[in-house]
Image (tube, rainbow, N blue to C red; front, side):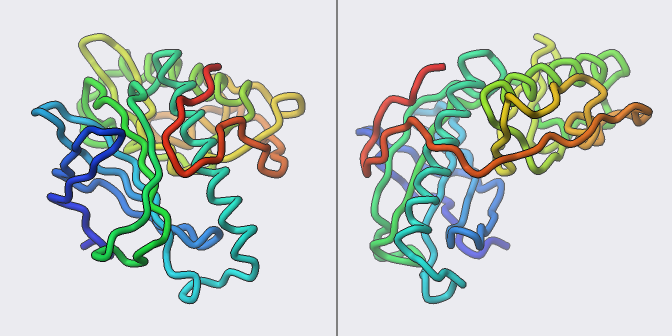
Length: 243
């Protein structure tokens, strides 16, 4: 059961109505006092992935400096938009559609607090966690190779994943194409000092998709402080920076 359900709620995002038909995830981020949700939404019978971030009541969170925390939360949101667009541009993620920031309506947990959306086209294929036992060895090798490529692309752009799980991935078996659909574990690294990611990297094997673990894991990349996002910090929709 979710702490708060968005099912059947309709949101006007950049002049388009999206109805939430299924909520997939819910995760509280205590650092910035917000909750993150991934859902499936529909518009004119077409499915979309909808990422939602919304502020929780600061009085219920252990936040010392609210203004600073709000700026950090906004940077996290902007970086996620950039990372989604990066993966989309290179064919490793759902196609970016739009994004926009609202104020929470009266029926949400913290009315007047921020409510942020990222809309993506629903990718082909199935969730890897659902088809894990059906994958052939050839498909697993292909997934491993593509996963290493997309994680290396992220590293080269100063991003990394701090969490790994098969449910973050979609695999289109017919086209042999892998998509990273959930950036819940998005973190930051320094491309100049971090190790390149290949198929033997622990960032790849940690997805625990393969029947045999690799024997030559490499060191964990060093991460720095959160970098400044180039995404405009505005309470309105802006095209993401193209990489």
